[in-house]
Structure formats: structure tokens, C-alpha cells
Length: 63
Image: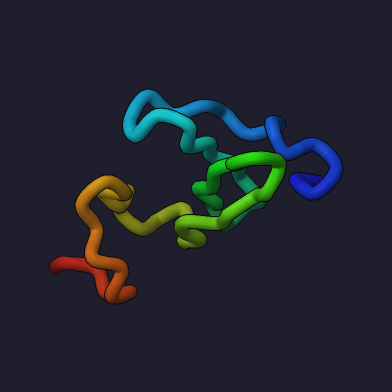
């Protein structure tokens, strides 16, 4: 779906340019830059929203 319609996801306020697409039970945060779709985060919908702007990307949730 995102391959054909990369702007289908909801635009997030922060950080600018990031979009969110839901594929239950998963949520995908991504951005499109110069026509290239880059996946930033794929998580289960029950997990906390990551802070994409400051997340170190180590893959672990803070508990």
C-alpha cells in the first residue's frame, strides 16, 4: 500500500515530514524524502510511542 501511495499515512506534527500508517496490530512511522520511503519505526500498537526525534534506536523500550 505505502509503495503505491506513500502519502497515505497521517502526517505527524513532530518531527516534520514524518507520517504514520497503521497495519493492525502494527504501527509504521516513516518519511518520504526525494521520492524514497524510509521506515523509521515499526512497533506493535500496544507499545509506547517512541520519541523519534531523540530515540537512540537501540530497539529497547524503557520500562
